[in-house]
Structures are given as C-alpha cells and as structure tokens.
Image (tube, rainbow, N blue to C red; front, side, top):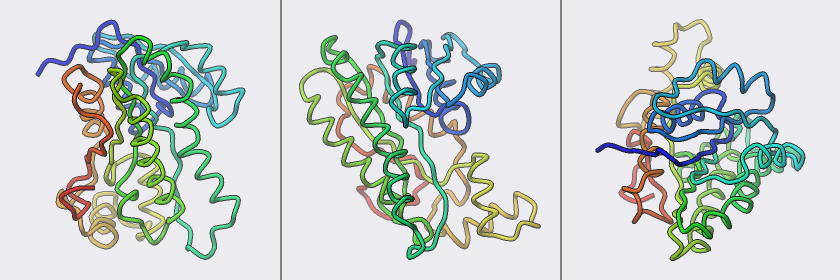
Length: 262
C-alpha cells in the first residue's frame, strides 16, 4: 500500500520528541508538509534537525498550545491544515488519594482541552474543503485505568469522548475524526516513568522486562511499543485509504487491552 500525502499539510502537536516526533517524521516521509510543534523555537529547531522528512517537508510551529497566546502563534504559523494530530500530553504517577485539585485540572487542560482548542480552530476549514483527518492520540489507560495514575487515565477516557463527539459534528463532510489508543511505548519519558516503578540500578533491558511483567502483564507483545509503530497507524488514518474509518478508537496497544472492542 503506497500512501501518498503530497499536497497535504499536517500539524502534529507536541512533536519534538517521542511518539509525536515519530508521527511527524512518518507523515513527512509520506510526502506531507508537516508542522512540528513544541513550546519553544529552540526545541522545535533541534527536533527538526534530527528528523527525516523523506519526500515531504518540515516547518516550525512553536507555541505552548495550553495557552491562548501559544495557540495563536501556532494558528499564525499554520493557518489551515488537512491533517491534525493531537499528540500533546503529560503523564506521571501519584497515589489516587494524593492527587490535588490543581493536578486534576492540569491533566484535563493539557491532555483534553488542548485537543479541543485545535479541533475547534481547524475543523471548520476542513469541512469547507470537504476533506480532513483529525486524530487524537489516546492511551490504553483510557480503557484500563492504571491505579498509579488515574488522573491520566481520566483525561484519556475523556479524549475518546471528544473524538467520538467531533466525529458526529463532522458527519457527512468528508472529514474523519478518530482516536488512536497507544499502548505502553518506548520513549524517553516512559524510561523515566519505568524507573519510578522498578529498581533504578537495573540495566534498561532488564528494567523494561520487569516493568512489563509487574505493571503491564496483560501485554501480548510483552515489550514496549516503538514510537514508529504508533506512527504507522497514524499515517494510514491520515490517508485517503482510511476514508470510511471515523468515530473510532483504533488500538496500537500490543494486545494490552483485554477486550475485542475498546
């Protein structure tokens, strides 16, 4: 299957590292013009130097989209897009009864409201042009709430509802809206998280195996997913081949969620 996104403009939020960077690179390699987003110009420029654009091009779209000023900076840099990937998110572990109100709000603002803000801005243009792809990067934690970070799970569950709701808003327009449920994925941030839960003296390969055995035993893959494996699903959903897939929650979770349907 040859996916050609030539002539399409994509924006990937939170794309200076990890899953977001892999998605941005994957879309560019398929021929898209991809806007790379991070909080600062420096982080965006450094990330773009590390990425492979392939047949496409990379452009800078710095701005903290959790603020009105930062979001406007991104809108100014990329006035319209054909593909929007809401990847920005935060995560971390805290005992359930120790999560303060401010943290609940922060997780909702960062993981849910930023996506809503982007969709609200770009969806009208997509519907006017009768073509568009919106994807919200969710998590297995949306359907298997982790005891060590229920505030994160809550935010990702909400993101599934946001995706389904906006898919209904876009019904019949040629625009699709989906969630991608990413399973435990190997990123720098996840390495730090793993070492919060297992012995820091363990070499990485052993630490990863211990984490999966102890904290994610449901995984059928029995390893962390690589960011490029998430990107492959996103690139497909961004293509014309995925025209009949909308309002869904598609899993790239390594079989972690023990259910036939999300």
